[in-house]
Image (cartoon, rainbow, N blue to C red; front, side, top):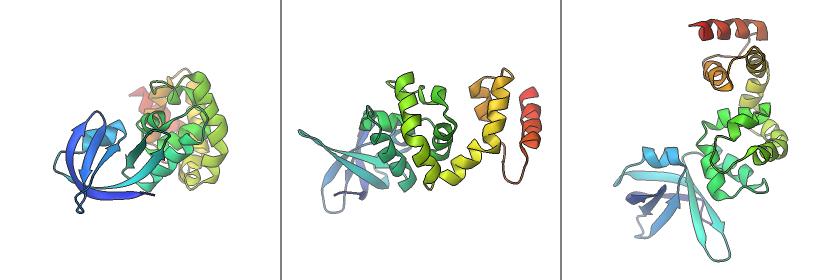
Length: 192
């Protein structure tokens, strides 16, 4: 199975790139939209890839890091999520932000992806919540679902929008701080 490709980008089109390896073989690789925008023609790249084998096609999906690839594979385990939807789910934010949203059960965050409705987002949360918390993402997402998660819930219950609260929560460090202290910090940031 192909799991890693390095080479030069010789073509970019529709969230796909063609990478020419030193062996002279060109591989077409589907990318998450944010990664596609980062890369340029004639740039040397190193990508972790996943080979999707279907009855009538073989398709490669590329990732910047192994964490992105692991989260992509977790999305594929959810019924109703295919490779294209999984790629778009990765464009919601960093692996930690997405994992945190799943750990908190933030369905609204997941429905921002085209093609992912409320029921699919709920299925993602139900099927992946325990996997995310017990995986290597658990430390980071657990932190977000711990004190930071409490702060997010409290601010939403006070009437702040989830988007506003998410932006503020990104700037807070939950390490060695009580929920009350984090809430005070967040309220100061929101009042500006």
